[in-house]
Image 1 (tube, rainbow, N blue to C red):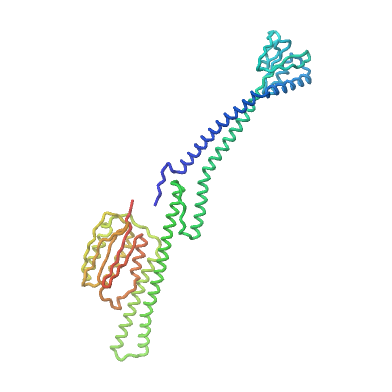
Image 2: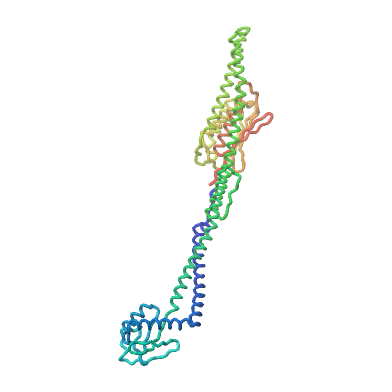
Amino acid sequence: MTRVIHRKDSLYLQLLKLLIGSAAAAFLIFLALNYVGEYVIDNYYYNSDYVQRKDGEYAEKLQRYIDEAHLHSGNGDQLNSWVKKQKVISLRVYKDGMLVFDSKYPEREFGDENVAMAMYEWESYHTVSFSDGKAEISVFGMYAYQFYTYARTAELLLSFLLFLAFVILGIRAKMNYILLLSNEIEILEGGSLDYQVTVKGKDELGALAGGLNSMRLSLGALMEKEAQMVQENQRIVTEMSHDLRTPVTSIMLYTEILKKGKYKDEEQLKEYLNRIEQKACRMKQLTDHLFAHSLVAGESEIALEEPETFEILFYDLFSETCSYLEQKGFQVEFKVQWMEEKIRIYTNYVTRIMDNITSNIIKYADAEKAVLIRSSYGEGQAGFFFENAVGYVDEKTQSACVGIQSVKNMMAKMGGECKIWRGKEWFGIEILFPLWRV
C-alpha cells in the first residue's frame, strides 16, 4: 500500500522551515548581541579615561617622531604622513594660538589665514616641542571604531555558529532516526521478521519505515506460505510414495506368479493380467497427477492479466463446463450471480483449475444427484463454490489429493485462495479471487 505524503510533511519543506527558522533565530540573537555589545563599548568608552590615555599615548608618539625627524611646526607633509600611518586619529597643531596644521585639510595653508585656536571641552590638548618652539596639539581618535569592528565580527561569527548549531540539532533528530532504521533493517536482515520497525512522522522517512513494515509482513506471510507449500509437497510425496508402493507390489506379485506359471487355467491368467493392467493404470494416474502438481509448484511468477468483470471472464467457460457435465449425465444447478467487481486472473491457470474440478466431479461425484455451482464471497474476495454428492469410487479411479493441491497452488499464485469442504456424503471446493481495487 502506497503511503501518501502531504506536501507540508515532506522532508524538503521541513528542511526549508528549519533553515528559515534557524536563520531568523540567529538574526535575532545577532541583534541582541549587537545591542549589548554597543552598550558595553559605549559605557566603557565614554565613562572611563580610555580616550584621554590614548590621546596622551599618541601625543608621546608624535613627540618621538618630531624629535627623530627634527620637524618644525610648518612641516605639514611629514605630519600628514605620520597621521596616515596611525589610521585612527586626526591631528590639529596650534602655534602661538594660531592653527598651523589640520590633518583633515592637509593641502591647506593656515599660516596666512590666522585661524585662532578654539578650545572644546570634548577635545584633549597636549604640548609638544618642535624645532621652532612649543605648540599645542589636539588629537581626535576614533578608538571606539576598532572595538565596534571587533565586536561586530565576533557577533556575526557567534550568530553563524548558532545558526549551524540550530540546523545540526534539527537534522540530528532525523539522522538519529535514519540510524535507528539502519539498525532495525539489520535486525530484519538477520531473519527476525517479527520485529516491528519504528514509524515516526508522516514524511518520507516515516513512509519508508511504514513500507519496511509492510514488506516485513508480506515477506513473513510469503515465507510462511512457502513453508506450508513445502510441508504440503512433502506430505503429498509421502502419500504418493505410499500409494505407489501398493500397486507396484501387486504388479511384482502377479508378474512373479505369471513367470512361474502358477495359475490354474486361461481364465485365471486373464484375471491376473487384468489386475496388472488396473494397477498400471493406477500408477499412471498417480504419476500424471504428480507431474501436473510439480509443474505448478515449480513454475516461476506469473503475469496477471488486465482486470475484468466475472461475467466477461467466466461466462463462456462456465457454459462449456455445464454443457460438458450434462453430456456426461450430470444435472447442474447454476446459481451464480454475476457481480460488477473486477478481478485479475491468469487464463491458463483458470482453465486448468476448471478442467481439474470438472474431472474430479466426473470421477467422484454421484451422477444421480445435482452438481451445485454458486457464487461465493469473502473479505475482499469473491469467486465460486462447487458442491457435489460423493458417488462410488472403484480402485481404478481412486487418486490422491494431488489435483486439489495443484488447484491450491495455482490459486495462491494468482493471489487467491482455495478451500476444501468435506462432509460424510458430499464434497465442496471453493475458489476465491482477490477483488481489484483502483
